[in-house]
Image: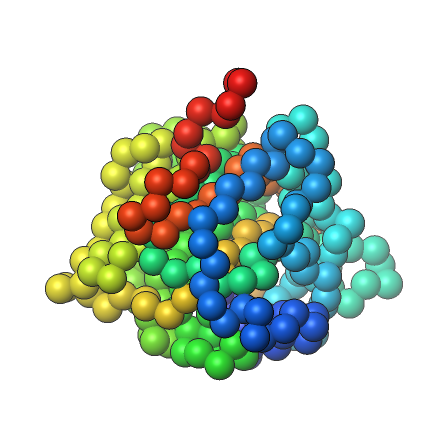
Length: 264
């Protein structure tokens, strides 16, 4: 998400995250495997926190609010909505993040992307200056102006590295699909529905190597993102649905979103 947000806004976001009172000592050691199936429960469960704050800058048009998150039969729905007239930003959006860091391993999400001009829905790992780190990031980002493609990118040691906007072969806003990446010391490999989709290898490219937090969100692009996402019209409404998110370290055999649901 932060790959196309101005640096000052990135730092504001990270600074507010620290201000939520989550103890740094508890976050220092990367956590182990977890599996969160949002389509079989009606709460986030331990290990997640919901963003609820406003970034006061003209470069970012979305305030995070708990009211933009809801449960449906399909899972966890994150909404983008026009904000009330008295609000400080034109839009209210939703963001959820993992409390503890994760590092090398397998990441999976089963989700339906949000559709609409200027709308961005995502899953990514992130750390940055307000966590005491240079910016490291790995992304799946869906641009609602064309959900037959997905933006994959990364940051390493504060350097913005080239992203790729790649054809999916289907419309990601029509229904759920499984998206994954393997983050390893010598490579990152992105997958779609179990098939390798894109990779970068350390011998040719710089790779992130700092543990980060898993985040997913829905937000509205503005003039600062016009060349990338387009600008969301002020009456835009959109939704992304998240059914499952999982992580496991290398060599682990812990269950993942891609595994059959017990009793399913």
